[in-house]
Amino acid sequence: MRHTTSLLLITVGAFAAQLAFVSASHAVPAFSRAHKVECTTCHTIYPELNEYGEAFLKNSYVYVGKGSKASKPAATAPAPAPAAAPAGDTATGEAPVVKGDGDAAKLSKLKAGAMGAVTAAQPAATAAPAATAAAEPAESQSEGLALSGIPEQLPISFTGSINYFTGDRRNMGTGGNDVDFAARSFKLHAAGNFRDKVGFFATYVAYSEQETGGNTSVTPSNNKTDINEFFLQWRHALGTPVNLKIGRFQPKLGLWKTNNKMSVTNNYVPYTYTVGDNSVFRIEQPQDAIEVNSILGKRFFGALGIVNHKGQNEKDGYGHIAYKFGGADYLGNEPNVDLDKEESILDFLTLTAGAYGYYGENGASNSTDPRNTYFRAGLDTELLYKIYRLRMLANYGEDDNVLLAANPWTDVISKAATIEGEVTLLVNLIAAARFEYLQQESAKAAFSNVYLRRYVATIGYAPLENLKLATEFKYEIGQTGVNRIGTLGATFSF
Amino acid sequence: MRKIILLAALITLIASTGADARIKVKGRGANMNFDPASLPPQYAETFNMMTKKCSKCHTMERTVIAIQTGRAPITGQIFDRQAVKAYGIKMLRKPNSEMSKPDIRNVVILLNYILDENKR
Image (cartoon, rainbow over all chains, first blue to last red):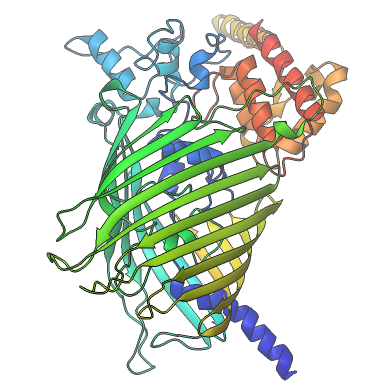
């Protein structure tokens, strides 16, 4: 009986232990409201993205296929004569006539452009543009707002996370206990685009649970409020295929952003590890940066960027490339499958491969003392076949002076890898299993080598598309021993 | 007398409008669907399968509106034969759609037929 109780506690606790490491979800219901689509248009179970969500992200939060030169509709034949014109169309299917003083034709054209019409993006297509403009869903948008580029709906969403966890957690912070219930975080997201020209995204942490070290009757208060990401992306700058991104954001390195995963706790180790107490750089951390990125040939994506650190004149630099074989391309176009032929494995197989590199330095602010110079290089791949998804990540890093000492320097080599398999059991039920590995070694005795093996099993269930329940068990082997942590998490967005 | 003439004209107008729509539609809102009685019998099996499988994730209203307007109701994109095939491939690849390639092929043929009929 005692054994059963312990197991139960561990399982329930497994849901909760990871609470301490829970990061916010980035699902954005504002997109659902703006485009009137369900969450599953872009997510498997949110916040994990499917390939259309990935295309939406890469297209600066512009609905794929809309206003894009290379999108599928631009290449299609003119629309058939509608049997029933949508509200607001004229009988001929042309853009509605704008009445009033001034140049009505010009204003009508402006309005059509403001509403994301294909007109401006595909000058070669002469038959479809007017009708396309008239039929865009955004047509009901008021003229003033459209011309101003202001989204019709206030593009704000909220995300809350509640986790319960338990287990034989080691290194528990102050206030941690064997079985812990926690209202982890509450965040605000603002995201969308201005007239399909500029994408924007911001995450504001309104509440994150503070560890309590005082009287146990005190409910933990707010740890802090903070801006997580806050950026603009000028889409197709100066008419080129290049997008220019400025602000605070996660530099484009790995294939997946922080929360693009099924787990409710740890992100992938190759994206999250730090080295020692001083080299606290992480692949996934939001930074103040400038980035240019572009989709080329529909299936290639590249990004280059410069990162600024406060109190440091030297800038960091990074680059990322990715290519997608099979599946929908980065503009959301479906692959060309011959429906008359026998079913082939290639009809369902998608392989995405990405590589990245980051070079930078860190140390004390405004200091010329010996600094730590480091680089990270990584390879990510994703295989998708029907209901199966396999992600593989590998990262190699070197730091040349992690102790920031004048002499001797302590160089550290880091190797990290993750392999994660997922199976979609039902539309709203996904199981995932992950193995992670981290090793950090130095020839110098001053650095304690790091060794970590982590096994994570997760089941994610979405009873409603905007509500995710996840149960997770983590088995972790490290220097300090073994952790068995269970987590039960609920995340909701609205 | 004038009222009777107006009423007759109205009835005639409604009747002629209905005659234009080769494939009739039944129901309203979420229950909207093509009327199977207006489809040739060889499409009956495919129609039933399409209704059952598609309705797992979205209403048939979405499909009906796309066919009737020539525009996908959410994206506003053109909904023609090429788009029908693209959506078919998307659904084929969608996890748990439980539709095989022959299923998708038959649905694409059916929707193309309805598209063509509605264009007449």
